[in-house]
Length: 387
Image (cartoon, rainbow, N blue to C red):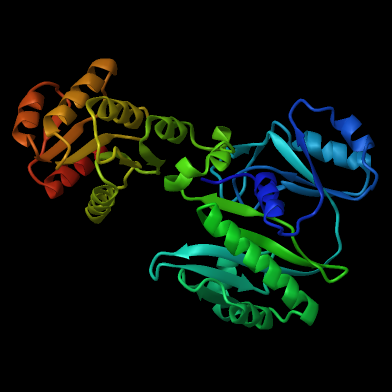
């Protein structure tokens, strides 16, 4: 789960990571009155959306007067911000973070993330902060420094010194970096994070390290024990269908293809999508109905997928281990009664009570096709989607 910058900075403050003083302005606030109440003249207004690249898209504006600040805030609020990380519709702006402008001597990059390959937390740093870190990694990989923290040993001072040396920090800044990294590591573990990122981590005019931006992603599977953070979720920042799927307990991600996929189990879903791609098709979505698939859940998943106007065929791939294929089949029939199906549906049922499930679906709808293998199912779905 992603949260807004202002929410991430509140968590930073709780863990003693230095951030700038700020104010949050929301839709419906008296903007002119707020701006008049400020002491300083030079401020930065930052649109709060779940996307990077805000600066290049007009989502970060420096204002050198109260009038200019009010104008910038009014232009952002209730507008939609389109960045390189959003689709063409952009994301709605319901809040603006206002921070006093600060002198920037240097911009660095710092992030903590889970390295699943080695089962450790990776600390990634670069002296090239404030820019597209992916571009830096691609064009000048030698400017990316990584240290891996063993879960049994924890973060070591020697690792901090290695990072500080690579970032060419002064003696006082090394101590500051150590305090920040130990605080971030504590935050990362305590809050079940999958990513904590500061871009940029600045050196201000007085030589102090300050988190000018903040990004936190929390593992969805740990939200049951992170209730405070779970309550920060902003449903307006997600795709409508993805948010609905979330509420239904479905793992759904919208993609750009024409073959809708309904599968039980994340691994099987990935394999199904890979096979669709292998045979020349494009998946319209990732949808894992989960290992505890029920009749109602299948029906809701089905309705969700066919709602997408880009879907020209649906591929249902269910492997019945704990799941009963006859209940899955009944869920498909329930969905067909609730919608007006206009696209072909190819169904592959294997495992527990698969024969009974196939019998339920046999000749029940003009658009239903039964397949015997996954390759056959994928090829049929692609053929119908291309027709």
